[in-house]
Length: 206
Image 1 (tube, rainbow, N blue to C red):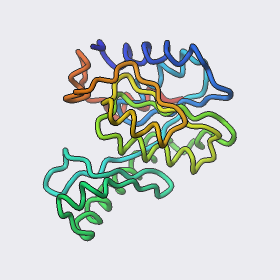
Image 2 (image 1 turned 90 degrees about the vertical axis):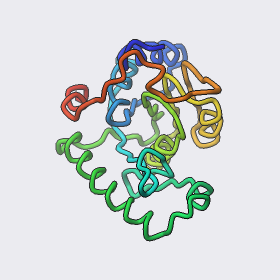
Image 3 (image 1 turned 45 degrees about the vertical axis):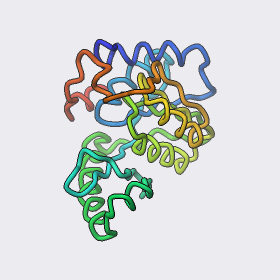
Image 4 (image 1 turned 180 degrees about the vertical axis):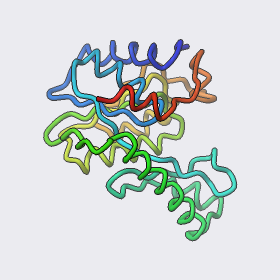
């Protein structure tokens, strides 16, 4: 159990600082992941930036993720689940259009006109507050590779064991403090898992 996202970031930072890669850049996933990432960046004494991604929820069941989209037009889908739920291309496109609007809003709000930190030839350390299905993290990995990161590490305080294994085939390295077989929900592992606001995200960014 983590007290809050700051505590989770400190514990994750302790794991990552034992083997700091060459030229690391920590990239938080807004919103909650940025709070965790700020502590990791402090532990590694490196730059902090963001990668903006958005979950694609099933039509009529937005809490059920069927994929994710990210900056640079990145799109990762759980094709098997989409087929199982019989989600049409039209219905999925509508969800994607809605989430694209929010993704663009967050990019403008959080970057505030400043350029993104270059990942060219560097190690991207993507940080979120937890992994459930993992599709937002998968999209973030693809964004980091599109930004020419030399290697990509994914770091989380807690992640479902099967999701961590799945993402191990996409990222070069996955580091998690806890990898329960039965995650239940990411929030279950935090004493304080209140929603992070846009203002808080901006406060943690340079």
